Image (cartoon, rainbow, N blue to C red; front, side, top):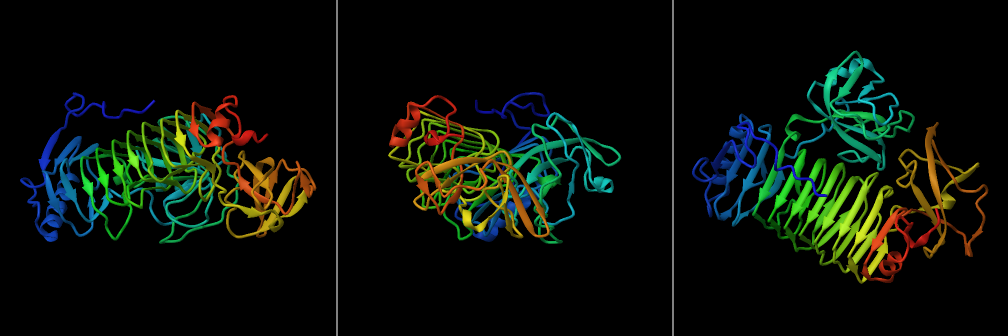
Length: 474
């Protein structure tokens, strides 16, 4: 089911209403066909005013063509901002809010191993409670898939809000959905201008401006030299919008929703990371590319991708109904492993296949015994996700055997990956011969119903629900 967050009450106690409506032209001096300087000044005036607002605000942008230098809408402000821009062309757009995590190593804290269902976490360094405040939203993570970049790319995460702060503890308003371990390797300490990459169980403080719901309605965004359009807010929604090239990038959201939107150009949608739930409804993105499974839950219905849909999800579920696309790929294109259940229903693709993901040569690892593979490395292994399944193939990507990762440890510069592989791994398995290639399993839990086009779709539709892709035995 799609989550409807539009029914939250306003300060006046009514639903689907605004506490105020302001006009970009008549209130703040914007001008269709006007100069960048004019519209930049109007945007600055709006952002200053919005920072003092509370409740639900609607900004009306009348039909016309508006040019900006580098436009970012909204800052710290009310509970919800709706930018109604039906019939308006907005040039030079970078997105809205564009906040989230501090890009440094002083706004997080490692926590002691904690189980799902707990509402309180204990900090490894108790004095670091000073990095948090009551009422603040936080990101709880485990693992690291990249070892670099911003924001972080953990293999497990969820968003929580702090209810209270104790002596070395944080208590959340709702219990944790997942368990988090403090034993995993730490590859990137970060510094004053680079975020701590995580690994062991970690809580990150979210910046205040991130805690808002922003919806953009009816706008058209031509291509800009800056490329992607970001909306780093708690809730980012796009309704009846169109982008010439790059669509809105899902990243750092509790909810990302694209409703009746179009991204017909060559850029499409790059799915970034740290999205609790992503929805594409009745939309036409040309391309959708998941670089990692850092989306917990995916919901797609009634949509068409004119070029490709390369997707996956993390610990949650992917529900894809009625998707039509020339190319469909199971599994993320780069980092991580899609662990969750995938349902494809009434979908059509002439070329349904799988993404090899971040593959590795088996020969790069040392068999330490008992299914343990070791390697000297200073960075994470993108496929080594505890609890996830991987596969061994030959060099032609023909499947030989699947296996599960059970643990990851590091000591003295060596990373050890515990698996269910036999020891030693034979040179011939199920009629395939080494050298072996390691791939993340593209779909360990797939339910296909009434899918057409590719033989993979049709054959998977004949298998029982929750079967591994290709029937690869787990």
